[in-house]
Length: 159
Image (cartoon, rainbow, N blue to C red):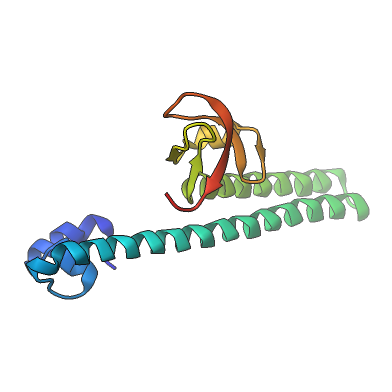
C-alpha cells in the first residue's frame, strides 16, 4: 500500500478511485458501494491486528527496559568498581528505562481505544492523559471527552 498522503495524487495520475486502489481492480459503479464497504471492513480488521501486535510489542520493550535497568543496578552493586562508574551505570540504566517507558506509553496511547465506563464512548486520549493517569494494567483513570466524567476506562481494540 502506498503512503496515505500520496494515495489521492496516485489515484488522479492513474485515473482511478480510492476504492479501485484499495480493491486492486477497477470497480464497476454498481458494485462500488459494496466494494467500498468490503475495503473499509478489511482496513478496520488490519488496524485491529496491527494494534494487537503493537500492544504485544509494548510488553516486550517494557520487559527489556526493566531487565536493562535492574541488570545495571545489579552490576553496580555487586561488582567492585569506582564510584563514578557505578553512578554512570545506574544513570544510564535509568535513562534507557525512561526512554523505553516513553515509547511504551506512546504505543499504549495510539494502539486501540479507551472506552468510558459511563457513556461507552471510544476514543484515543492525549499522551499527557495516558502519562499522568493512574492505571491498573490497561485500565486508566481518566476524564471522558464526551461526558466529562472521570472514571476507570478500559483499553479496547475495536471501535
